[in-house]
Length: 305
Image (cartoon, rainbow, N blue to C red; front, side, top):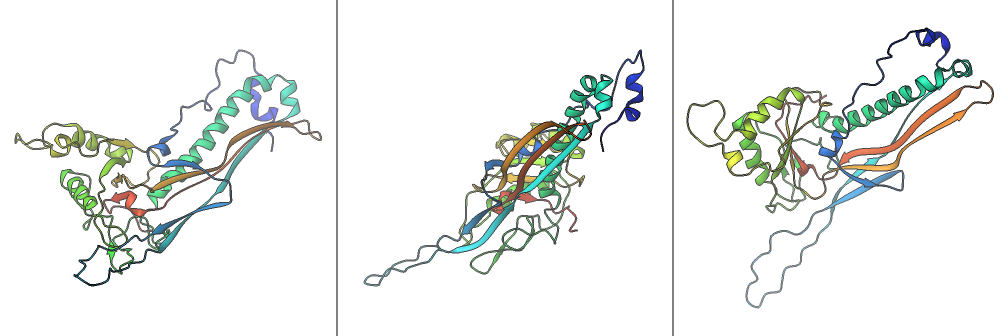
């Protein structure tokens, strides 16, 4: 349905001072704090996890060397979605000089709607990270204590006991990340590099990660997280996270969170012959997801559905 003169009656009145409601600032590009962006030229992208080799054994004198086999363990799939929105202005509204006044404003509002959807979809990868119905390539949720290994065991990327953000939970998260293993159970050198938090935790995070002394004590102990240079990229607030007490530590794993762009945002304007209306459209196609679940560590405070 097109925007008509009856919907814009105030715009026709003389002496109008201001129009408001369409030009709010918007939170944008917060997805870039989490995801690496790549391009795609097909309907979906797949990335395959390889298992590597087990630990090398001792070769006894005169004995043959042991052969090992690497293999595929699971496949992560990114299925692109098309996001689009449009609006139209009637021919009569254009004739009454509403086009010049409103087209730019509604175009900015359209851009804000497109941006909001992108940020929501990006944040939902974390918001739904413990949903039992949302599984990664390895068959379990992104944040889980039961990620399967090729050896038959499991690894965990969540605190054993759910905890709020504090000195103890943050330090334990860093210790647990340093204990990560690969698909064959070999230790791998990973560390927490950035913390993603909801707006409700920004003041707690600031105190924990910027204070030179320990937070909330009368002792003169140093803040070990600060003095050791842990979490070098600091913290980033994501305004689209829905859980108020969940925090996420991103690691330096090579293939973690990814954003695939199948078709970048494109806008179009066209006139309709039958009605004379002018139509505006925005469209883009993309996907958000993750390959290796070792890309993140959680504190276990998320809902499971």
